[in-house]
Image (cartoon, rainbow, N blue to C red; front, side, top):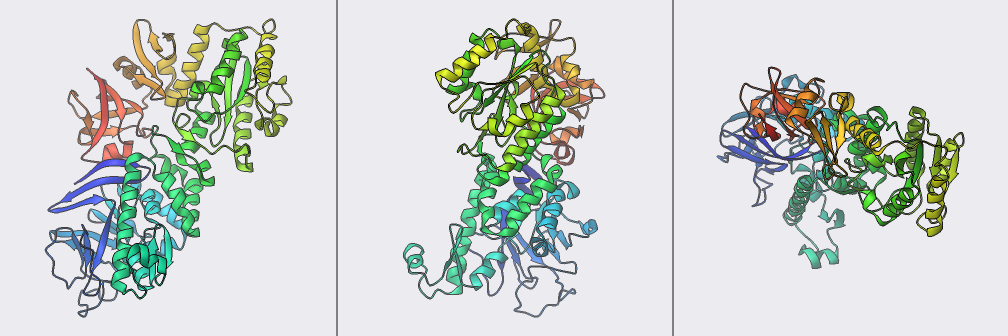
Length: 588
């Protein structure tokens, strides 16, 4: 039985219980042989088939590629790479895994899926990224994934990021046998005097001394990885650790650029603050999905006729920053605010329309600001702005930008363009130019009412959140209340409400009934009336577009019985027997 306690990308903290075996993932299986002893804090081990053990958390290797009949001469170390043959593992309570090749998933038996040729996949980073990013979906989330022979303190975070639950200590054993002492992500020569001073490892350490020290480094990294999963910051850790080896950077980039679909399914639509420090941050699955939704889902507000381009700010959401409060004041003082569509130019997202500034990840990201944009950052911003302009014709475009104007000016030339920025967009002079420029347009551009404009903004947000299902909530609806307490009403019935902390719309039970007409974002349950949260055991089906954090309706035989927030993606809801699937907010 497997229960997921926390998730971040494909990584997860889970509790596995099966007939006396109890594992918490991610976990290291320490090799235990006559010549290699596990550390005293080992919670799980992997042993030779001729070793006797009654530990419930010991995986015993019953046969290997060299001795398929299991009659291995005494004293030989466990064969940890398991290439070829069908290396069978069992616990004290019976078989748990057949070790098989990445090219043959037909032998996927047992509750632990062991990848025999994991060490070979590391040598082919593109194949590594393709295989492991899709493996969880292939074998279902109910199984644990074990990649033997490849883990060490340097790559543990990357392996977890790609969905591997279990590792062994072979990589650390090999490094120790070579005299490599691992310390805070670096390899230190075993004869270093500084090393002796801070770690207690002498000038001529034994293999056992080095091994036990490196084991502690492995455990330290496991603690760091587990905490990163809980905090939702694993990707930042991976981007930092991946610098250790070229294959790790390659695997990360192949995962982002070629296996985005595999990762996107496991990427929540909510999350905490994060720092996009690395080049690879441009292609994080959550950031890439934002740009994709902006291009494919987002309905541009129809009523504003003036586009004002603004720079980003360090504080999020932007409107709470000092600079953006000044921008909004200048726009408001012009008397043309309802006619203005504010769009922020930023990296790594590209552009952020003001009405989407609270969605994830626009409200959560942070970046180092130097004023220098690299070519990829420029290309992303240019592409998204060009797409926006191709989908809507603005009567006037005002660029209140500084450095960003240099790489955007050429795609704005065909429009009536006014540049009010300069070296300091926050100066009194620049703000006055922005205000006066808008004021001069009063007689030539019609202003929409705030009722119409607010409706357009909420419709844009709804389309970003629910995709093609947005008309079921917005057709024939009106917006009641002032920001941020806005409600979507159809007659006297409230369908949803804007929640800025969440960055989206929160469904009422009537809203769930309306959304159900689209067939999207639905979770089907067995025939019971929900009185609390929905657990996976009660789910019979779920719409494939559901991601963790999505607003969903819960139904049985066409009757909507509850609405709430998804705690699993659709595949997990259908596959798992334990764990919270939907956090219920309203029910019948």
